[in-house]
Length: 288
Image (cartoon, rainbow, N blue to C red; front, side, top):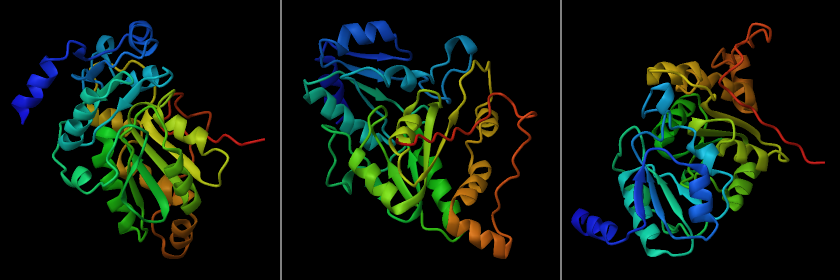
């Protein structure tokens, strides 16, 4: 299978693998004429990639999110990666970017084999676990983190929904509408900068609903030779750091905490003492 896949790739002259992306080149060279180019963002389009300040590559989703006609896919496993590649090679309608997971490509056959609606022609989010109260949308390489967050919430007596978005720059509005109607809290997890990223798009779309949207990712900046675990902890992108915030936003969890002394929201820091690049972005956009 791998040999056949490699032969297919090599037969197409417009396939390339990069670890960074040039906005002017990508925009004018592929998205304007809608060339069916296939680009693999490999070797570091992730906080798990290169850590030198001069070679940081986790700004890509914010970079590509505003480009028309471009479809950016974020697989959560090897099987999805191969399915996305097969689809991208067969279609000729648009340029496609596939964001290779930076923290290792895991095997999760169930994400593909159990999805009867597997297609990348239009944005469609995959609901992996269906629950209530809290919906966790875990994009690409952060899908495993989303699973751990949901497991922790289940330990608190909640029944969270886990979503595998797959589409890194586009929204599945139908699924988001269903999520907003059934959940009081929506959490986005993305392997990249918050500002201009995918989570902000979700928050903006749901801004007129009653759902509280919490976006988790990395604050923009140029950390140099960082330790991944330390960077994620500083930005609150851990189960331990984020769980209290869910409790503060979820009425059922908050009510139980008041009675049983369970998970409690952390005391808010003094704004005057807060670091300027704090980790959690809460974006609320209200309609007129």
